[in-house]
Length: 206
Image (cartoon, rainbow, N blue to C red; front, side, top):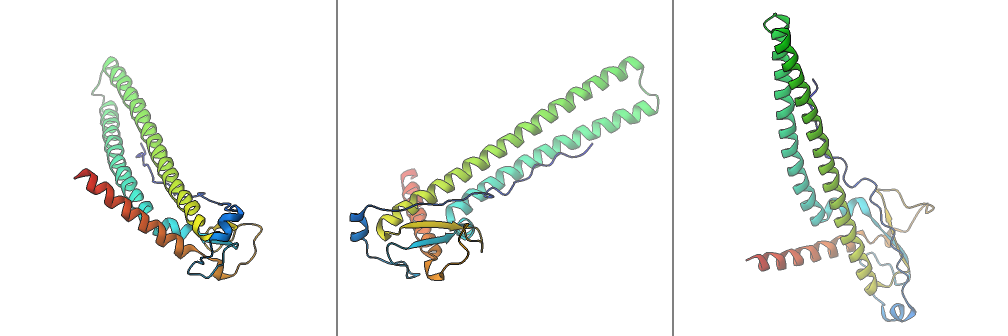
């Protein structure tokens, strides 16, 4: 019997944000700031979503918690799979040696089938739990990034903010001026906000 193994999938695969940030004329005229990259207000800018996810403190903290849960589930699933495998081999060994009457063999076989079905149900349930945990984690990160970017652009006044996946620009963009890359700004703001909010939560718990 194969051991059941649950894997932490690429929780952030396919997570994408394209934030249209056209503001009202008043907001645009009031905002004259530029990012460290030097993109003026009214520009169409972009940030590297892969970098943000990899370097965003909240994403790393949530990923660490999720991995700990998955490792714990994996250990329990594998423990149960090993026990079932051992029971099946022991039954087969006794059967091969003629140590069981037909009635006892049938009874133990039914019991093993029931154990196997219970195990399959348990493994499927844990897989579903992991999938739900991952989806909630993705939603939390996407919501935090989106909320921050919208608030960030109230100050910066960009016409539009796009996201890239690694070195790939969003279609149909073929190339872009590096000065329009605001990834460092987004990361700095997200992490600063997360640290500040986490500090408030820690104080409230004391």
